[in-house]
Image 1 (cartoon, rainbow, N blue to C red):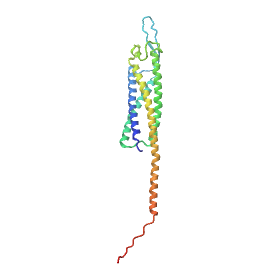
Image 2: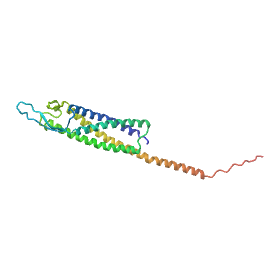
Image 3: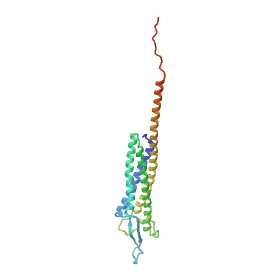
Length: 238
């Protein structure tokens, strides 16, 4: 297929941004998982003790940690985005060097994959936002504590995990996950434009070939039907 250079350059740039956003998602989630000893803070449930007996400092008591799948889902989307973005960016650079593009079937598969991952990343973003909000409600006792969720990472929560940077890690992961979702939307639109371009090339290619054959055929038939000039007879000069 004929290459649309500008469209492919923009698509390569989006793939590069996907790699960066995916790394900004995977790294904080890995750091948070390491600090929390593999436990997931999203959708955790608990309460604050009343500080009884007298003189005891109130502490956070967790009923249950969040489901590991909530954190693993977001991490999976980030890892897939990094790997897919890197592979497609390299593939696009090869296409630019070879001055060709995907065929019609390959372009359709790219659009289909973009739609599927767009819905997955959108679902992961919603889960991440709801789970993070639920965890903030727990650590701030539904905003009854004298500090915000961001400040609670500086407060001793008396848990057996390191909570000194949970807000930084989870807020960065949340923002990166929404950025990944936006970039997958951009990938879907660009993939659809490339599919439309491939479809146009698929339709116009045979038509141009057919018109060329018709023009060649008409020129050959006209040349064969035209009368040939009379033969030249030698004249005798006296």
